[in-house]
Every structure is written in C-alpha cells, then in structure tokens.
Image 1 (cartoon, rainbow, N blue to C red):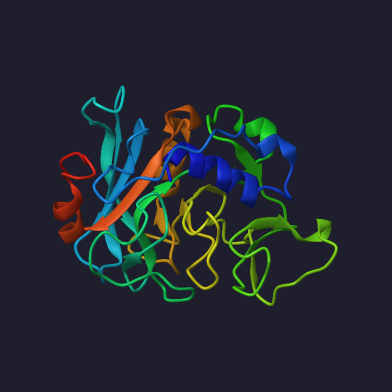
Image 2 (cartoon, one colour; image 1 turned 120 degrees about the horizontal axis):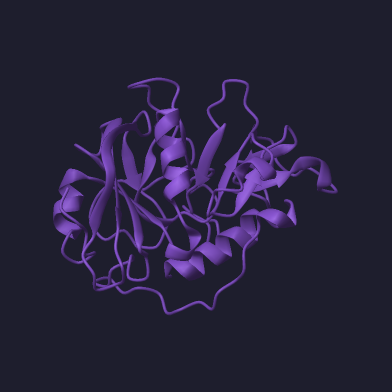
Length: 263
C-alpha cells in the first residue's frame, strides 16, 4: 500500500473517535508495492533511523527530502541520536508489505520497535490546537481522556480514542496519552499495523520525547525534545512523509531496491 493510501486509512481509523479538526482528506488507494518496488515511491520526506543490529537499543536518525520520485534524496539538518525498543528491532507491518528479509517479527509486548517503512500520518501533543498552527501535519491535542488501546482483543486495538465518548470500554489495557512524565508532550504517530490492525502484531508506536539520553523505549523511537520539535516543524503531510527504520545489515540489502540515500 502506498504512503498516501496508508496515511489516509490510518487517520480515518485512528482518529474516528477524536475531534474532527485533526482529520485529513482521504486519497484513492494506489496498487500495493511489489517486493522490488520502493515503498517510498510517492514520498518526498524521509526519516531514516539506523541501528547497528537487530538487538541494539541505540540508533541514529537523519532526515532527507527530495523534489520528486526520481530525484535524489538530500539530507536535512544534523544526524541525531535516538533510542528504540529495549530489545531492539523486529519487522513491523507497514508500507513495505511482507517482511522483505529474514529477521524477527514484531509482536505486542516484545519491547521491540518496528523495522520497515511506515507512513507518518499525524502529530499529537499536550498543546491546544491553536498553539500547533505552524505544524503541517494533522494535529491531535491530547487530553486525559485520550488513550492508546493496546489490548489485542479490543475492537479499538492500535487506535487512539476518547474513552468517555465510547458507549462501552472493551479493553483491559490502554495507555493514557497525557502522561505526567511529558514523554508525549510532542510526538508523531507511526502507521505500524494499521491497515487493518492485526491482533497481537504491536500497537501504539510513536516518535516522541525520550526519558533521557540512552534510555530505550517499550517499542517507540525516542529523542531529545528539541529534536522532536525540529522534526514536527519540518514534516509536511503534502510530502507524504515516511519513516524507514532498519538495522544496518537490512539497510545494506534494501538500499538499492528501496532507493534509499547513503547513510
């Protein structure tokens, strides 16, 4: 599935029960990418995260942009340190389709961040919508009522919902998005396992503020608050931004087929 189609499907699914102001228009769904086609073929913004191996919790991030599908990628801003899941990476479910190489598969609660290519459909944060006017992604203001459902048995699995707006709660596990520690003060939703969600394949994956340098996550990708803000000011939904997250061995194998930049 292309970035445009997956982003539209993700926003429609993840934000169905949230304020209309954070939604975006739907696009027609192009044909899914084949095994050799680049999952980034309609993206003009790329966030590339590379770890040394499948088990590493530390990684580096570089942003890139280009003028069109055939144009070369050019770096934007500095390379920065990030952390991923405490047990490393595993293949997620995203723009790349079936896992293109060998390696572990992402599961709920495994402590791994998803590897592969993923749309970045919307941003979120603690600030009210009027304070996020400079952002070029759809924006979701977080309140204490917004939760990320991580119960695989729930009909709302891998969605952010306003709990009080539902007629009944059908989950036994969910994360309150308005956290006291500020990790979700600013963030971006990663469209892993969204089209549609497969029970137990992992949920609620974000780019967000880290707990501190070198401190891994439960499966998200985290970085310094200043880097999150820089990323948010740059990302533009019209450019169909994507996250590619890989161990270095997979990057070497996929750089050609996916037309990835040098890292």
